[in-house]
Image (tube, rainbow, N blue to C red; front, side, top):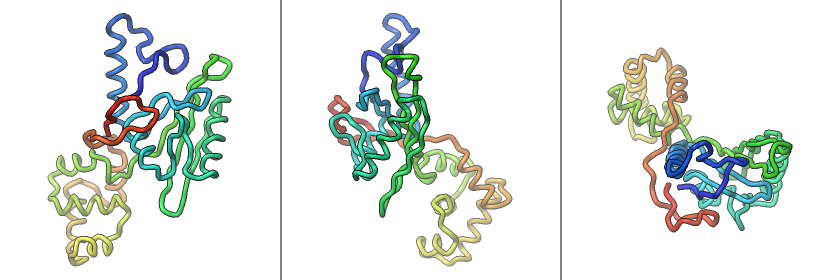
Length: 231
């Protein structure tokens, strides 16, 4: 779960407006809800310190592909990436929204820096950082959709291949079958899902609610004080 501080997002905490023993329950429930979102989420204070992360953000930091946590600060894995992150954070602390695109030879990651409070409204402005969504093929709702439409395992695999941007020849080669077999499965996909084209099917799949897989254990990152982080 998230690291829990005494206050969050300005002068009110997660339990602002909730009295007595109900406040910790409300905090825990909100944190569980945010862990189910397939975006990495971080909250950073005016000193650039990471105050809160959800499990996908912790996973991204622990993987150290393009972003890392050092001394409770959000940094890039290169000096240029760190500069981009700092620019996004500085703008957000001044009340402006900023999209940052990080890339190297193997990975890419987009981050949205969003001010949670205007600097004139509070002495302690905070910034929400949203990491890009997971790939569509990693969205558990895609598999749930396949089950609800009665797709066979092979049809589901073809649909996930299409979500990954593969063409019919690529899917056929990956599955070790003839292209005609994949085309037949694509036709069956359209019929079972009621979509007149693959483009329509992809639009429908991309509009599914983001559902993350069941949480699993990973190594905790530095700013998370708990002994075990969940992912």
